[in-house]
Length: 477
Image (cartoon, rainbow, N blue to C red; front, side, top):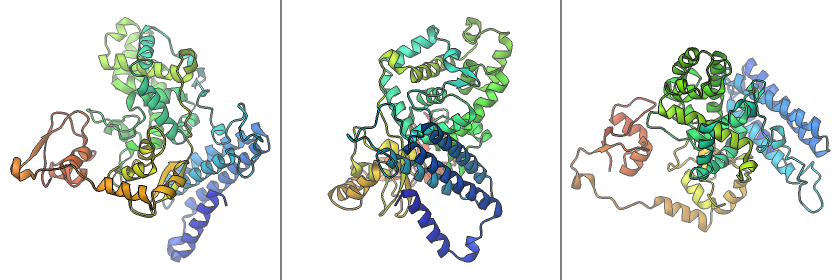
């Protein structure tokens, strides 16, 4: 039975067991659910066509279905009584279904030697441009003609290819795990994937919980006020700046606004992302037709922005042309699915018992499930997004057995501590260091969580702290 059928069956059982009044779905929400069902069937038909060798028709059907799913999910978020999780679960199931078919499962013919021909694309990834050959258009213009390979960009490229190379490759790997969430937002808006990657690589290296000293947060580093303008902020105790899909959507809205007022000038738009749209617009108007790279314009930019723009454009260029620079991005299976926890476990605990490849699964689990603190146990029955390689490993090593017990024991271990009253008296404090978060401080000092520490210090969400700030460690052990 296909994974998506299981999800549908479970949803039907839950629906039928609910009270009659709970089963009433508002008409507008039901209309979106009908669109979801129709788009899912179209997606599957596209997969079937690919399996029959009808590559063009299959990919077109998948693209149309994906666009409908995205649009319906957006409208669901603004519709009373509509459950957006239903759309995410459906999409994850379709990705898993396509991944299984790509591996030679039901509906796909597989070469007799078990290898997929080099020119045959995966049906799921085929719905989007291949990562090594992304659509490179910026509002009708080829991005490769928009990016100017001048001295600043070349200098930034040299750094990406030397001491920053591990960071660039890590950004690529992290991005591939989130690509199915982020890239469709850019694709629908007609913005180039290379720009998305360049911003992500420079801002966060693809770590969704990255926080800057200035208070910017998330994979695309939105400040609280800017994020709020584009739909990001605290919802149900979660800062949606950390959500990769919502952050990508906000980034699209931001860039479209910048391009509209800056005459589609890419360099000035990227400068606005870092240095503020007001400053970028003033400089653009005062430049009188001069290029962003003109010395008279550069002289008016903060040093950080002068460096930022070439770094982003250089990363975007390398994304488009890795082979020309001897850069080999590793292959990453970016398909995701959903598991339901059979017992309470934290993301740390899961990363330990799963084991896995060179870097393990911690970063992927963290990025795909941004709502959860990594050290806090998540209740049994919770559904988590995971890479497609995880479910069999979870069943084998994390539900029971030696590795499962080992992970529990390791998570229960703690470093030796000295009672606070024995060394510092009842009123302790801590001076914030660069890179600290309330969660990390609370964890190190036994403060009972970021929220408790914030309340003790009179901090309001989004709980921004800065290096040098002194916090009271009230009730911490």
